[in-house]
Amino acid sequence: MEYYELHPVNPELRFINKAINILKEGGVIIYPTDTVYGIGCDIFNKQALDRVKEIKSNPDIKLLSFICPDLKDIAKYAKVSDYAYKTMKRLLPGPYTFILPAAKNVPKKLWSKRKTVGIRIPDHPVALKIVEGLGNPIVSTSTTTRKGELLIDPLEIRSVFDFQVDLMLASGNLSGTPSSVIDLSGEEPVIVREGAGDITSLT
Image 1: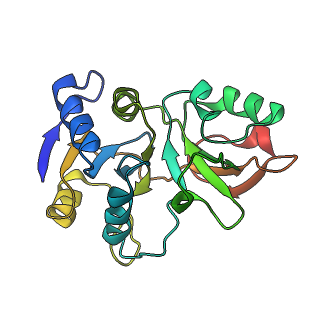
Image 2: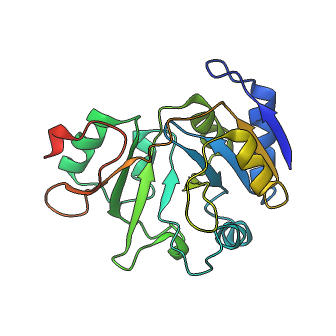
């Protein structure tokens, strides 16, 4: 695994470009978000999606979440109602995952049984620059042990996943609190998981 430590405020573009090139070639990376480290790949690369499932030690896992670069991009991958758009516009970018009805062009490997997907726009320059440069969303599934314990220390993550992913971009210890998950697929918001981010305006 290639491993690079990035400046937390002004991340070096040459390292980000390495990650983008690996994703374009069907690789798998670990990258920082505004909550935890994510394991990611291009959502349109079937082999890479299968690799991520193997890394997560669950071939049947639904990789519900993926990262988009901005709000206007979300409409390509999900059906967004007026109220859902207004809700997301108020909170994004930020530590939230929004569940929305899936658009047909999103791989079904990412759909839930309810035909929904989880979409994130994290408030972190590295994650956003990666998806902007790639031109496609990337999977966002957290770095956990086989027992499901969350890993947030970059060196520990490196030791665990060293031979499973192609590259890791480190940006120090992150908050370690997963994103709040809000279901916007119905007529009103439903809090699925209370995590990072203020959700008082939704309750």
